[in-house]
Amino acid sequence: MPRVAEKDNSSARLALLDKQTLFLSLDEKTKGFIHSIASNHRLTFQQLMQITEMAVDLRMWNEVLLPERWIELENQITSENGNAGKTIFEQLRQQWHSLKNGETVYDSVTKLSSWDWKKRVTTHERDDTIFGMCPVASEKTICCNLLTIDAIQGCGFGCSYCSIQTFYDEKSISVDANLSDKLQVITLDPSRKYHICSGQSSDSLFLGNSSRVLTTQLDFARRNPNVILEFKTKSKNVSHLLETDVPPNVFVSWSVNPQSITENEEHFSASLKDRLVAARRVADRGILIGFHFHPMVHYRGWENDYETLIRKVLSIFSSEEVALVSFGTLTFIKSAIKNLRLKGLSSKVLQIPLEETAGKLSYPQQIKEELFQTAWHAFAPWHDSVFFYLCMENRELWQSVFGFCHDNNNAFEEALLEQVFNKSSRLARYLN
Image (tube, rainbow, N blue to C red):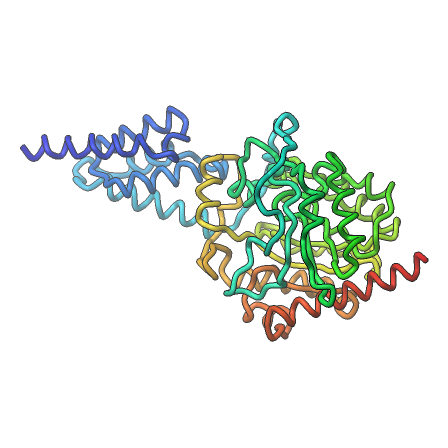
């Protein structure tokens, strides 16, 4: 009777496992292998789910796959060991933890070969609100009170770490046909200054001026000179900005990373070289620019790569052309991690130690300090002439990196706005 009951429990566990979305995302060979070890060993449902997650991660990280690892460990266990399954599971989990907590290595390019986004762009009237607070703002971190315009929802650059794919339907990229009307009715206090960005729900320049999406936003900036409007991008698509009259209260910022990260994790974005060339062309047009070193990634060779990149930025641009520079790193909500595993793209962004902080998962504090302090020290020539800040980080990290922290979010916002408006005003006087 016990054997019959045990067999029934095993069948029930497998039936439940077969209904799990992440398990269904595995290839048939791996699913069959997990079925076999579930039948041969007394593994709990929770162990089977952890094995499934490890199988997905090992595939994404381009490491030795789960079946090969399990068989190798199984061959090391004596047949007399009646608890072999539990032993193998624990050893497998130790290997997985070692890979997560060890040094991330990019020793080959895993760039995707195709991405069919052009057929999925739609322009239609949306009944949602396009204007609001930055979606990643948190009371637990120092925040700049950024406001956002969701002119486009969805992006086709396919960056492996991007949270946009979690918030929006990845099968479509939606342009709001009502954008002009919605921007017309936004009520702003004329006695206040605002920092507004359109690069949170999509890349600001991803579609260029398709459906007049840039023209409409530039008109909004002209009507509201108390607004600093930021176009945030990983694109080289700046032709419209070079051919039109861009008001001085608009600036364009580029998210930048060393080319190894761009090639492996930012699949269909512009290359690092093309981004810097585009930024130089925009600055030559008299438009303020900015740089977001976000997400900074900790991997073998990161320190030299980021210092080299920053030296290049310092050599190409003058501090007077740069509105701001921010530092940030890989930060995930749990649903984003689940979505990344379901997509199963070759990526190492989850092959990192993750700790919970401010309700999200990110690098431990020590690694963040190493990343941000290295970047901050490399930017020493610009310390007194460019506004620097950390994105979504706590007060302790600000103190560790910069030696100070703004008293509150409003003080942070006011300091940012003052510096950027001063530069835009000087630029406007120079152009006139």
